[in-house]
View 1 (cartoon, rainbow, N blue to C red):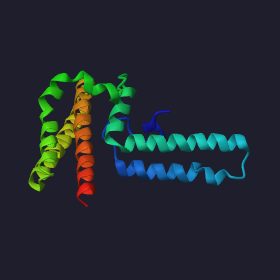
View 2: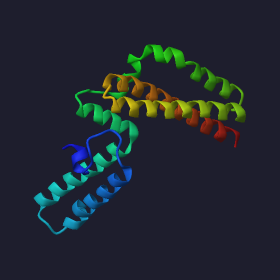
View 3: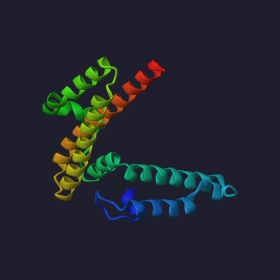
Length: 174
């Protein structure tokens, strides 16, 4: 089942998120398992599977990265998050310095100014990657999208590591 069809959305990367949510709730009202509690076991099973499909589709289309990977898949490109970064060595070499900055932050007890600076750098890179992905999807340059997704994954990962390390630091000082 094509999730764009399921939610009555045009098959394009940029979607109307409000319409997605509205159609999701309409489908939930129609196919929620609690509404079929008195039906046969076979009907309940079908409804449960449909409800799972609706939830999975909604989560996929709502999330920028998941929607990008799904859209690539619909267009014949198999993308696995786990291996994407490994295929973009030039990028990794260029931005590995962000991990060095993170290490420096830890050594300096997460100096607030340095922390804010690094967070801003990472957030700007994430926003830039997302805009580039949207642009490349419009131009149907799917191979470029894949490369940019690998970059976005890197920035998202370092953002998560930074948050995790900072939380560990905060627990240690409290």
